[in-house]
Length: 225
Image (cartoon, rainbow, N blue to C red; front, top):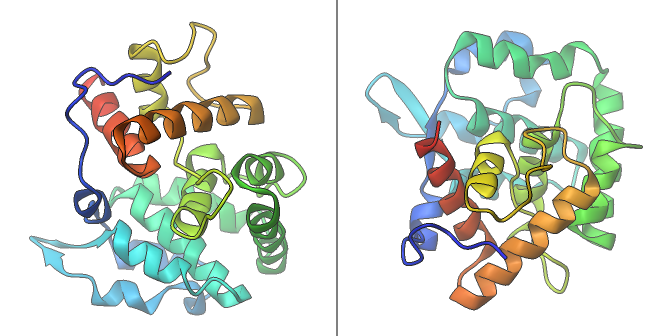
């Protein structure tokens, strides 16, 4: 059972959806297979100081149009942009995805994994991305972002996918939600399923959505860095 340190300190959903990350369009464009992979909606994001910022709400909007190959490409890029920030090293690391797979290969893997998400749920889609539908250099920290934006607001009966990355994992270990054997990365499907169960159980007890719990865990994990 997940129990956060400050049991009352959960962000409201509006705050979660408004979580905005700066990005540098000029760093990304040369690293994509071609310019059509760039979601033009990102060009409408507001600037704060030097950089434009994309929030979760915007990426959800992009995800709502992921019913085509182009839409899924845009979802992938938007999720990467939202999760990366502006540092050149971080952007280059994410762009390895496009260096080591063909566009048609990425299209096929994304399409299959998101079909699994729709038909069989979050844990099965995690397994797909981690095994048969693996995209090289697209690890759990980022493919769970793709799953989250693709399925959290459209999930009906199955568990809503939520993001699992090293920051969230740090918080899970610090709150004793998992045992000492829990890895800092490279989580198996069983790890993800355990995480989903804990997040959904806690969200239900608090009367909130699962991504509010994930956001609180992420905030706590950042404080522990």
